[in-house]
Image (cartoon, rainbow, N blue to C red; front, side):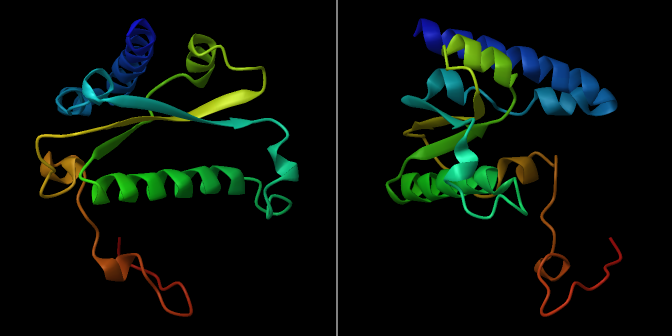
Length: 154
């Protein structure tokens, strides 16, 4: 639990810095629930390691493909968790160097996500950021195009 406490403290420091950077939206941001790290059954940290370019295809022209691969793996975990009735949260508020030090990762390793997995009392009936009016869902026709990318009014 001591390790989880250190991760929570690192996340909370970054959460406060992020809130301060948001100016007038600070208080609204601070009301968002982010206690999954303390409450969840399991904490997983996803990381990338130097030298990975020799294993990930597509990096010659799209060097960010390794991050895309990690994101796809996380999404698959999220879907599998939900299918099993588990909740999963993706924490992205942290300093990668601090988390790497807390976890004693080797030089060249970079944490990219802290995942909180476990049973939840209930699932949101809509995404939390939408429910809290932090963001709103965009209509599909603003995001999906056929053959070419059409200009939108937004």
